[in-house]
Length: 243
Image (cartoon, rainbow, N blue to C red):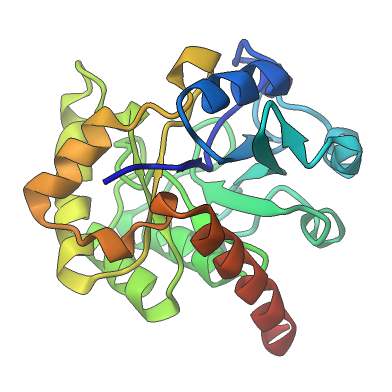
């Protein structure tokens, strides 16, 4: 299975990442990737860029080093209602909107409240994909999230960084979540969550996990740039029937 797309990467604009978009694109090109998401953290994250950063994304070239760029955001869920920290008038201009929970931005709660927040964000018509549900900071009903992924046909991420050595609890959560995704057959993205150029396009641990649990290749968007672009185009068409 060849991965041609990495949709979850960060640049120096995130404040705790250390490469430029050009450096990330060059690394992607050298690894044979054809499509790259530029998804810096939303503004409630410590050190993240202001909304002005996201309002100016249109100046970026469509392609760098032979790799097509999708400028967007990793938006932060900020309350139990699943509200994102980026206003709709900014989200409408982005080519890619990821959403997830982060300790700096979300108040925490019971497993029911956390799961509700995550699923409400999934139901937001401006959310394209969800990220790293396996992180242990907030307890989630991972089976319910996998089921909703299949029902909504909204991709949820298998995050390669979450599977790093030394993250035992996160690894166990990711394994359980991947097993549920294999059961319900919802769509998946595999993300590097790269915060430095040498991590772009690194999916080794995620690929091993999906093989172990029996996730099907046709569940994974990363294998085809055109499949990702078609999904995003369809997502935008459907948006106007749900708002």
